[in-house]
Structures are given as C-alpha cells and as structure tokens.
Amino acid sequence: MKTIISAALIALAAGTSAFAAIQPIPGSLTYDNANVQLEKAPAGSTFLHTFANGDGRDVREVYKVNADKSVTLVTRSVSNAS
Image (cartoon, rainbow, N blue to C red; front, side, top):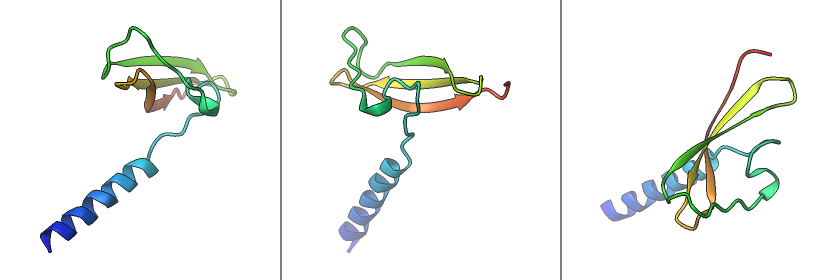
C-alpha cells in the first residue's frame, strides 16, 4: 500500500511541476519553440537574459543549462517602472 501511495505522490508532483513551468513570452530565448544550444557553458550553470517588453518594462529571465546543452527557463521577473 505504501508503494502505491508513494508512486501516486511522485506522479502528482511530476505533473504539478510540468504544469507550473514558466512559459516563454516574446523576447524569451526559448519563445516560439526556439532550440537554443550552448556550446561552452557547463551543465547545471545558470545565466541571466534581460530584454524590454512591449510596454517599456525590463524583463529578467534566468535560464539553466541542461546536460544536452539546451536551456530551460527557470524564473522571470518584470520591473515595475514603465
């Protein structure tokens, strides 16, 4: 019984994390299914990408480099100044 409950909790957590993933917006490196590959960045490292959105506010995104050299959007913040 414990195995079934544990498996159900793991499946729920995996589904929740996929659902809660941040979606790219225009200006994001991965917007429109762009396949970004980094050649020299070590796997697990992170980097910052900043751009202006359409209403003049700055958007700051943090990306993580995956083992296959692709990138994943981790966090996003938008400045309050417009």
